[in-house]
Length: 283
Image (tube, rainbow, N blue to C red; front, side, top):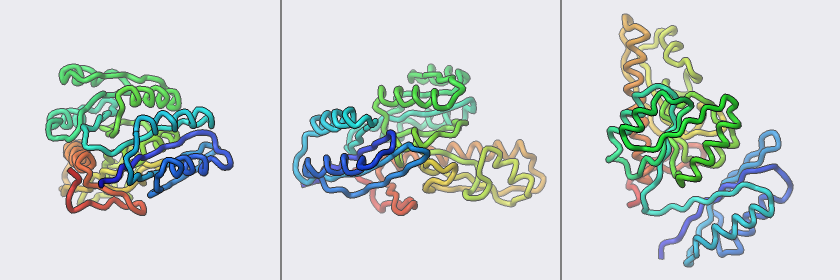
């Protein structure tokens, strides 16, 4: 009999004994703890645990009971179930269109549904409207306020995967911990070289002969999450920075799309901060 795996994310104010509260709950329901990761930053506690159940479990009842427990403990808890049903995708954007256009043009190849596009401004809203996908502008300048809105939007659309399609904001631990290994970013360099927003300019100034892009899962550490895919292109010494950017942005879009496909086909597994590609995806 195939076991049921439930991912549980807990975020809230750190205090003694909170890990035991939720691991004991999973044990009490017949679960076996397969993964547990926890972090504390400036009094903010985040934990992700996976519990497997070899016997039939009422998932809706489990969700209801753990949410009641979370309310009692004053923690924010969400659950994630790996199923064969279609995954819901949220695309986070700013104003660069190529990544978004590439993903939308190839959306039928994804084993998931692009349920919502969230922008820091309204520049790309016409593209979303043309594709008949809901677009929500979250224009709050304070990132904490913006993230609170994005969290509510993701809950509304029951989002399974978040893709940062040139989203030009840094996500806080409070957000990232809620979607462990379910936020994919594209970065314009072969990480760990040239982190930050000005990667192409840094590569141009250093005269590198090969420039690349990196798709990776997002963690609380900027540009240091587990690497999924990397690709590169050769640079001619006479190439301008504008030509390099154009080549890079095209490759960014293609590499982000590939990473999304692999994630949605359950071909990726993170172990010890490294992404391992399974020989066969779970169908």
